Length: 59
Image 1 (cartoon, rainbow, N blue to C red):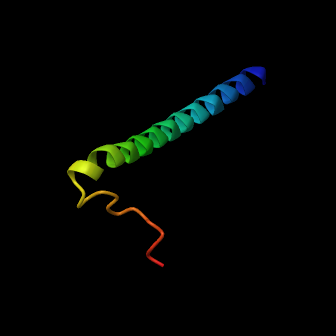
Image 2: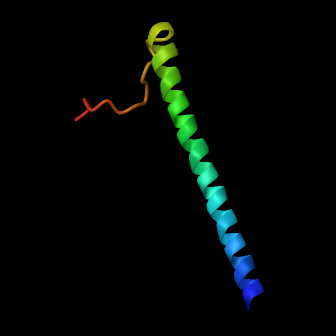
């Protein structure tokens, strides 16, 4: 019974690691895109700056 519990704990830890790693990648990608949008698109491509983002003025 102890061996099964140990295997189950390892599987659960691996699942948490995979989900957590995916979330970290998602957060990093979203932050990077927002920084690039602010620094690059604002000056060089003003027509697409903040395109598709909610600005709070639509209501």
